[in-house]
Image (cartoon, rainbow, N blue to C red):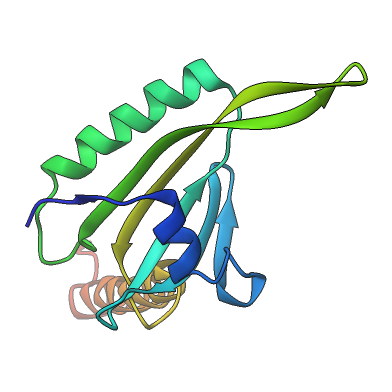
Length: 146
């Protein structure tokens, strides 16, 4: 299934205007919100921050291309994207002027069990325990020969 081009207006609607109540988390490059599509599907919407317009375009394109290549059962599905520019009026030196505002967002399937890092840390801890136990058993079962 190919990711869909989704309008920024639709993303605002499915996240209740990017409501703080639907915010799942945030990082350096943006915030992630839970959204509910027209057909009742829950999605995660990553709304990207504008840090540097030239760099942002390059990073967005690079991430988009990488996401398009991914197709694996253990990776959340990339469902859609938004890349829109709109004209807005802003005040500049006491005058109202038109400026361009670019909206970038990525949509993924929603995973209900929270952040992956919580699950990974538990798995890593288990792995360390198993490795530690295995290492101890090897040491106990096979004492150093003199």
